Image (cartoon, rainbow over all chains, first blue to last red; front, side, top):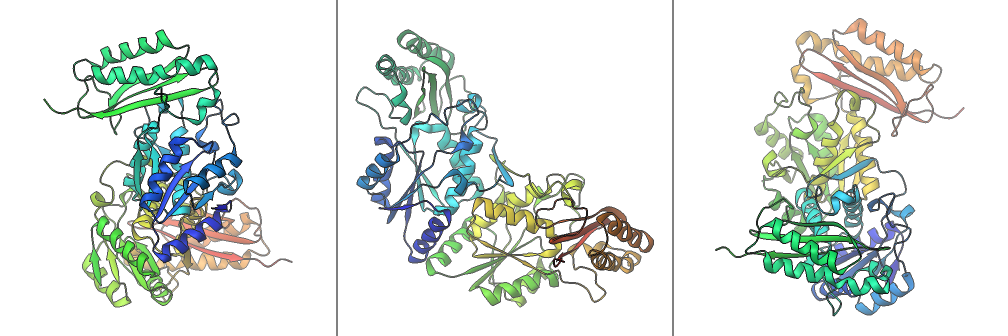
Length: 282
Length: 282
């Protein structure tokens, strides 16, 4: 596995693959890799000639009071995991390298961002589309892989790529979970023992909500989901919502493809999870 | 010459060239071609395997009170000129084809836009960077050619490409002029006979200003330039400025690379022109 820290070097390498006609799979991450990330790598190595993973804790997608400094990092261990999973190039630029100057053009995500994490994390998705625009130009991937745990991110990125015609295919991969249902996340490491025991109730609540979706109103579903979280965890609910997917519009009843998503703030970790599913007509 | 109107077809064609290792030169235009555009094509055909020209009058870069409807169009004549000049593919999508939906991500040009045309045309450069982002992803050029007449556009596009690492080289080509010095422009067609006789004084004023640059203050230079325009044309001065280039910052004296630029509103046409030059030290 080759490690590249220079943007120019990465872009030149991508140009060479382009000339050679190689298909490039890309797994953008913020590091502290877990099985979720490695599943994305697995999909990429199966489908593409070359797999590039980026590790970059993107300051632009963290708010001033968020956990940018605290976000877990372990680059040595990440290198081992990435290499073992079959990554060909690990791209880890510094922030100074990726953003050498104040950006002369701002990107602002104006759709699919007024709900869910977009509400409590203003500017978050602006940071996401900005860094991905740069990374897509540098790595020039054929396919880019994202986890469905960040369902809103997938919806926003899909919108970006379609509207601006980035020559890349976006593939979303199902959330990888612990055996008790907790969605794998780099932030899980900041749960206390007590919180770690409570955390599986996020997915339990979502699974229950999904069962209710066919015969209950959004209001009824969210009320039940909320009580499961409140009665079984010490976390503070940031949001629980049921929306159309991928447009993320309010709905009174589940119809077509919908997402039920939640964010719960524990003492040191804010966890998100969701279920996306399609209801058959009739 | 092949004419393509479909975005998908253009992007597929670009993908094929990519696999074949062809270098692609790109000349984005709003049509109503004149010698200025064709000089860009000439540069492209000399340097690249393939030359793509786009013709797209981009609604996003016109303000609500500007001349979008009035902007001159003549697609049949443009096709003849483009083919004769050696264009391989003429890409002419409709607005509906390029912008099928409201954009979910906005691009906002925040630097190099608070002076010159950026002042009187708010949102203009946002529209420019937006359409170029899409066109660059669709055409995937190796090199893109721009005229120096739109010097601020060149500065903004250069900033975009550098910061977001678009894998394209921007080449700026000197302004092509009529024998009397008037910069070639699609909008010249809307000058009255009287105005057409006055219009060369724009470049005469700039040429005089450039001569003054070494030994006069910005204030003195602009005052003289202004009187030349006022005394010799019926146009209304929108701006005359001398700034650093390409950063477009205010300067009290010319130093390093500078631009002297002006915009003059005639009855049916707003004309812009500029000179960019570098002063030797000492």
